Amino acid sequence: MADSFKASSEFGFLLCPLTHQIFEDPVLAEDGQTYEREGIVQHIEKNGTSPLTQQPLSIHQLRPNSIIKKMVNEFRSKHNYFKLDTHIKKKSRRALFQAHGKTVWEAEWIGKDGPPICLMKINGVKALKEASFYEKMTRHPNIVKTYGIVDEPANITSHSITLLQEYASEGNLFELLQDQPSMPDEHVLSEMFVQISDAMVFLAHNQVVHGDLACRNVLVFRYDANEPKHNLVKLTDFGLSRGSSMYAPVGTASTTTLTIVPIRYAAPEILSNSNNKNSYTEKSDVFSMGVLMWEAYSKGEMPWSNVENDNEVCQKVMNGERLKQPSKCTDRMWSIILNCMSQQEKNRPSFEELKRQLLGFMLNSASTSGIN
Image (cartoon, rainbow, N blue to C red):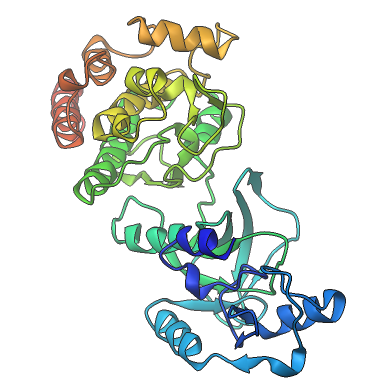
């Protein structure tokens, strides 16, 4: 059990195998394992044995693990840390959003003014690794900013890490599309598509596959229906969320991270072989980007909403069928979208190419409509 825990993340040795939290006061027990002092003391008082090997343990034999403590301090020095109820606090105990693997609360700074913020708790044995990944990806202006990791009281029931992130008061693009009385102007949507594509160029350059491109994973920080350039959207959820009705197992009796995919946004190569890591590429993200653009032009309508069964959707996509052109989508933009949803990966553009196509579309549209 201990070995599998350590293998779960390159940072696993910084987490107590009992509390699943970053060590504060690591102690070495007689079973050769390091635990958080408070957690193992409570466990010994209740059970008298090791939680990993079941051998008898004594509180009096616990010894500080100075090596792990030093490594934790070094790790903390490389990351921004915020303490819950000291630096920041939740605005409400009620979560803004909760799905499998992720919970989000609106938060506020304590004792100082600052930008709008939220807390995102990531659950799972790879939570710390995923949190560090979020921090690394925060450098792009169209990727949601992560300020750092939040220290909070230990939760011994699950592996979890809480991140402090910027808060999008406008919500996500899906919500915005649903709330607007009419579809945003094509120039506004095009500007958003360029920003999303630019973020995806950055991810692709860093050899990162998003795996979950959809309007619900695009946060809206500024919305201006009249001035396209005043809009600001940012990408979030790099395949971490797998809990809504949009996700389902594909073609296998077992359910793993790779087999849980957003069916209605997925490329045919993923639907036909979701267990193959090589199916997840920049080009599979480009396919999903095509579906995202269709969704935006359809005012947030669920892809293939006329097809109830996910397996039927899989068959349609794998057989080369595609979503129908939305009524508000121009033929030129539809050509770009269809190109993204090409059956063969080699026929889809890269995100760099897609960004150029979208910029060309915007330039042409501006010149014909007189927009500056």
